[in-house]
Length: 318
Image 1 (cartoon, rainbow, N blue to C red):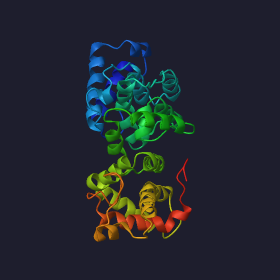
Image 2: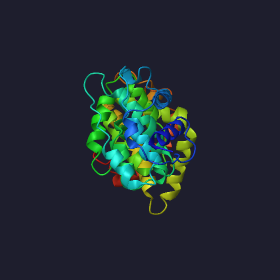
Image 3: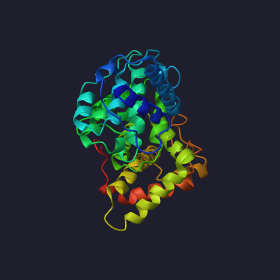
Image 4: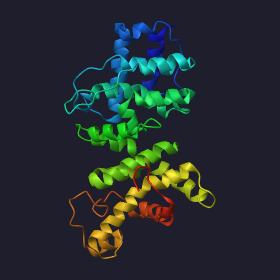
């Protein structure tokens, strides 16, 4: 087995991940820069599967350009994680993605996320790779930093830059909504999503509410379980995950408060609906205007967050 074989095995796993990523050797690393036709086909297939899975469309996020062999380097590094020093050097050699105001870079981002996304979502992340390898993997994949979390300790600025650019791409907001609506067992992921959601609250309220609608429609049982676990945990000293769950819902509570302040009536959202007062804001940008948001579901969640909001601070926000 050589590095190309290792990379192909990880690429095939990434399309239908089950368990940890496969492992292999890292001999013949130079071949990753000039892959054979079978490996090129496998990379294209895995990228297409990822694009469909995250809803990036075709061409992915509007970029008709091709992807470089960099995703193969990520795949080989993940598969070769039992050789952490060599895998680390391989990830160090991955060139950064340049996201321009034009289309360039987004097909590359999707190709890298095709590998890094499933690896980061595995348990443990990247199959138990050394922590520094995990952070290097995130650094090499801007889209994964947006949809999963930025690299520690200094990746937040890069994550925000990629987020802002993603929101300008065709289908970019839908990709973000699909990812951010899902619960996560990783507190760091939820803390990052709280930052994303609070930014959306201030800049793109319709996209913010799309996320919470998606949480209700697509992941209701998962969020029910996460919130109930947090509720039980709050009887003692809360775990980092419990705090992260509350932080995730804090932007919605703030949006609710914003609506009430705008009206200046001191009425709760459901009371305004019952009274027929409506909301003069643009359609789709208010909680009251979202009929798919079941207030009997979200109201107890917001009430829980409200009771503990004095101790909650969104990282990088407030």
